[in-house]
Image (cartoon, rainbow, N blue to C red):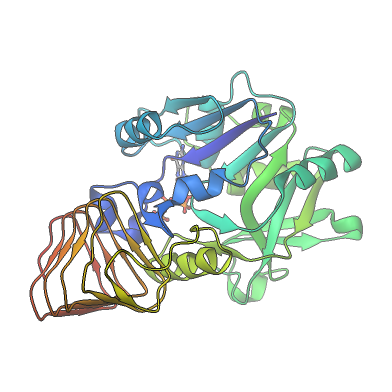
Length: 324
Ligand code: GTP
């Protein structure tokens, strides 16, 4: 089977960071969001096709420099085509069936089992579903017998949400689904295509492990916590010479001698945290510099940010080269 990965969105909810970096390259628990999503794919996948758009060149360069275990092909869009348009544009030569992955979710699921469920049930596909308290920002499924999806409403009004089971952004589809997408124009797969698939047999697969949409600052930090708790950041708890609780994922060339850490921190490549500084529950992207006695809590700092000596940054999202 092949995998088609949607990675062309603007990531507006994570601005200003996403003004210069696509959200899928933001590191959490020690590696980019995209790489955590791809970790969910079985080892025997034949090819990963990345449907790129916004900042496609940066994604291309990153995957070339950090090879994955599968052959990877990127198919950029000249204009944003939406989720369905992106699938259509990148879908030629897709396997039958194929995996479809959003690149901004984190989850604990064995996707091979989702493929097995599709093989057992037939129909046009199996969509993984996560149960959430507030389904309004998502695509919400109504479920019938054997978890057949009988209705699907994208971003419903509160009173129109048919359940709390939402599209988790990880699915297996028959190739014929690509034929149902109109070509040559932007298409929302969830709004324009999914409702028409229901009569052909679309099934839900209820996730039982953790799931989160890492598309907002708050949820990105929550996703990072879940990944750390799942042990997805390796064994190291603190950078050399640092103290505190951790865990901290320090990427290549990050240093923090004499700094202290609370839980759940990623130090991107080349990040420098000086002695006496304190960091917790945060993501510090490549080249960021936290000077002595500064504090960073619950924040996402874009590449090459500087936090001046003694300053405190709490609950903030700072774009590339910001100074605090
Ligand atoms: P926001 O602007 O913050 O809503 O983020 P987003 O642009 O990523 O949108 P959303 O979270 O709704 O997108 C879901 C998935 O589809 C993500 O993996 C996106 O990268 C992807 N996506 C969204 N729009 C496009 C598009 O036009 N083309 C492609 N190829 N992928 C898209």
